[in-house]
Length: 221
Image 1: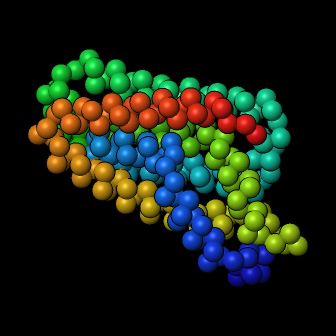
Image 2: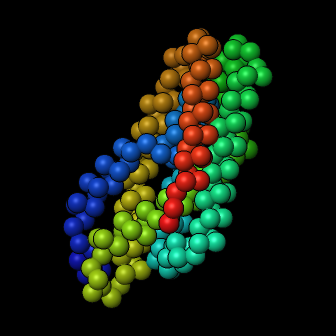
Image 3: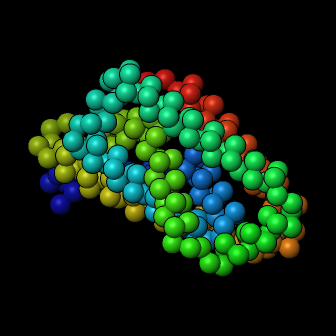
């Protein structure tokens, strides 16, 4: 079936996706931040949001929209600036939250949210994960440059091939990010009795978000 669509080297594609997932980026940082701050359920909600964003990128590639964004300097700049601003906003909010509340308050809030996250909070984290992925122009360029390498230039079904590869990528990435969320979420239960450690973890992740936002501004087409 894959060969009929013109997909080449599917095994190498899966290996490449797994290796690329090991490279830290805004998506990984967001999953770790939500998992450590609010527990495993919040981490998984962020994973689902990011995976939904990848699905959207897949359809954009199949429909040719990614190529239009990459070719348009204006559209690319708008997405880049919006994505950078959003990452800086998330990082700043984390830093402000840890500085305006005492360590004991931070720990208490973390434990309660880790045990039971209300549906609105879950939806909010999902949307944040989605926006973190959609507003990253590097992801647009990644889909545009990476997936076509595994589709034959002679394929008459390129849109369908891109969709199949996108699904494979989403499945592998969701498993990887889900494992990160599960492991990082376990930290919440281990450090809830040590609020100072937890506070510095959140501050470190917040600073990392700001750094990633600044780095994103420097990305060129």
